Image (cartoon, rainbow over all chains, first blue to last red; front, side, top):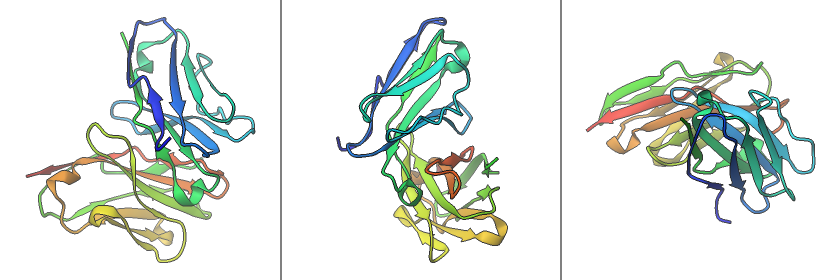
Amino acid sequence: GAGVSQSPSNKVTEKGKDVELRCDPISGHTALYWYRQSLGQGLEFLIYFQGNSAPDKSGLPSDRFSAERTGGSVSTLTIQRTQQEDSAVYLCASSTQGASAYGYTFGSGTRLTVV
Amino acid sequence: AQSVSQHNHHVILSEAASLELGCNYSYGGTVNLFWYVQYPGQHLQLLLKYFSGDPLVKGIKGFEAEFIKSKFSFNLRKPSVQWSDTAEYFCAVIHNNAGNMLTFGGGTRLMVKP
């Protein structure tokens, strides 16, 4: 597609429920990233996929968070047993191999509210 | 660990005032540097980038940034801001040992009063 697509754009869930957030990267982009943007905070790195390599999960805040990328394209970020502190905007970005020169293209994000 | 610092969290300016937003990073090796902007209700957009060559980089909408290696800085500037520049600005760094990993600063929220 023309840009990075994320769905849903907004999600309200009850504490303790599981949620899935979806990211559809730009076609042909080999790298995919998830970041979290909390109110008053910067962008917190969560996880990074590059091609067929094992993902870099070093930013996932707890074992309630997981992500997968199927077929080198669409990615799903899953948060189990959601907590109120999980409320944030979850941003997905994708890039070509040469992201160090060109940066990322970001999606519009999913605003997650845990009540 | 690599870190990026934006010391100004909130900046309020009147239209036509000059802008300078600070950005400092901690890594001493080769770096690529970026400024992203997030207008209200919109997604992050690339404003400008530096990866080699002239350390004074010009971006969209009249913004520029200067890479000063000795100061580990990449400050963002604009000579005369407009109300439409109201947004949040993020500095970000990729260093050569981090692959494609962007590390972001905490952001600076700019409000321009008409």
